[in-house]
Image (cartoon, rainbow, N blue to C red; front, side, top):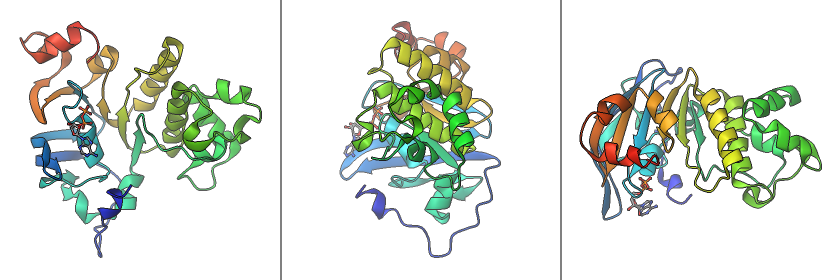
Length: 259
Ligand code: ADP
């Protein structure tokens, strides 16, 4: 949170009217203070496509994903949205284009309803319920003591990991953003929850532009491009079938099915 506050919007931001073409990482490097975590990252995520990030833990995937909503800025290089440096836009407007679902999605000590409706003004009960249904969350919410008006506790402590993830998916469904940033990590979920989360994410990703930190083979197989990130660099890139036909880290990772 402290780091986030160092991100400033420009005094005279460029106008942002939706998302039309692509997000481009151009020679992006990033360091947390002294520690370089990303080196010379180059790729383009075109509108409507999905890019999956895979690779060993600690390689820099989450950091890379955090640069898109400007939780951090690159130490060098730039990230462009439709050809404009992200730093030239108003940060809140920029984030307004994005739905973010991660393991640490921010939930508040408030009701289920308010957590789903967060960021969307004047959401109706019907809209919140529809979003929860898409996110496979309506079932468990209905069984809570006060349904949608149940308080979820500090950071959602009264819910399981899978339930929290489905609430944050419902929030993204309701917000209906053109760009999605997902971390589909599920190590903490039981298999029923995992299936429900997986299904909800698949529905959410349809017809959107998605950057996903992928852990499931099904997601990876459908990605338009896979970037294999190791020690802060893109060490391999291509589609699943291209990468499977080459010797390398991807083949090894996917043979154990948990990239
Ligand atoms: P991945 O998502 O691939 O597991 P991360 O982006 O989380 O990788 O981490 C990349 C590296 O950056 C790791 O060495 C991690 O310890 C370090 N790192 C992550 N977050 C921070 C932070 N807030 N401050 C300092 N180092 C960090």
